[in-house]
Image (cartoon, rainbow, N blue to C red; front, side):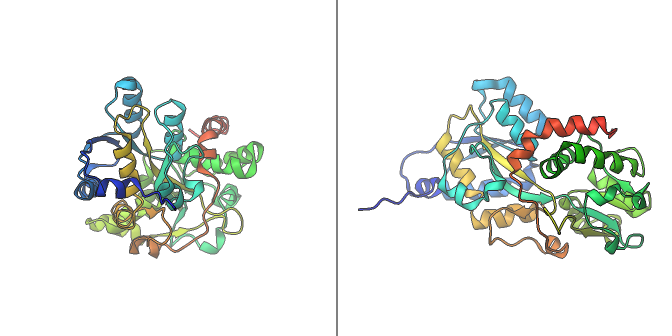
Length: 335
């Protein structure tokens, strides 16, 4: 006799027992997730009440609400925030064969408190008319003299940059990374200002020649209905750094079961549905990100950026190194 464990989604689909509704706190805008939630409801009968907000504001709200929080699930961007939510006691462990088999180990928490649902890369993006890609090689080489006054990047308070520096610490150690960051800061074209899109527009406008930005920001410009955005994208190209060693830095948008969840089984069912083939295809495409499940194709826009080796460091390590990275950036003069 043998017993086969089926996923929570399948179990709920076949169940005749009444299921509870769930509450989702999400930093994704409604249009970028609601259609997926509607499909989940059609399949399972589980209604999902969605509350959207800024990433850090949602963490603050969960902390304030404590055990009385109605939230069953949290969706937020970047491993640093997911790690922070875990450290704040806002999440709980999930044992799911479906999730563990679908999501690569480096893109989920070692204690199963959070799971990557899509990934994004943070490559070098350069102005095609001013930079020969043969001059580019690694993040570390951006500290070289030839890039003085030519680099745009946002501030050290930005969590995407903190995770990038954490990945360098994981690879090279604190001392070498600090020396590199000092050189990088010395090559900034201007004091950090604005978001990733602003860095891309500055590179296109000639303020700098290189920007470091997440891939989905460039993809948005490519897919924009505005001719001015398309014109910016047309002037830029992606270079994948560190292909001869650790690979290009990546991060995730992820999800976690809240510590306060009252509807654990139904919430886990949604997590498992989000790594299904159909959900991954739609969710990654509409958010201009990469699927985390092997075998699910990326969008044509992302394919056009090329393929590359990505850094396979466990992202949980980057969460652990976040505060070290922030202190290092401060010492190195990164405003």
